[in-house]
Image (cartoon, rainbow, N blue to C red; front, side):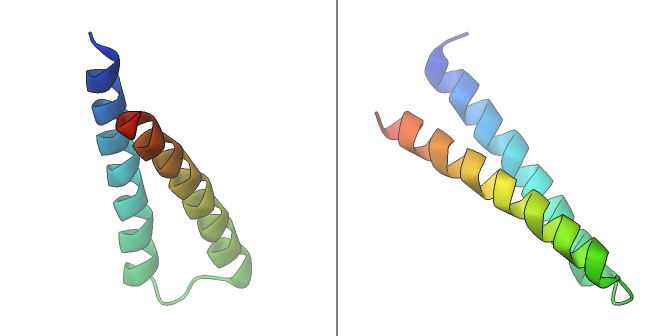
Length: 59
């Protein structure tokens, strides 16, 4: 499998995970502050990974 295909698959995977977290947060209006912070941290990690993968794809 080529590097570009691996990068594309990783981008797809992390994008789906990001959307799952966003959907979870939008569907639950009774989240505690701790849960919101935890999900926010998870989103930040996913966004960092996606940014790095986008840069790698461009190079």
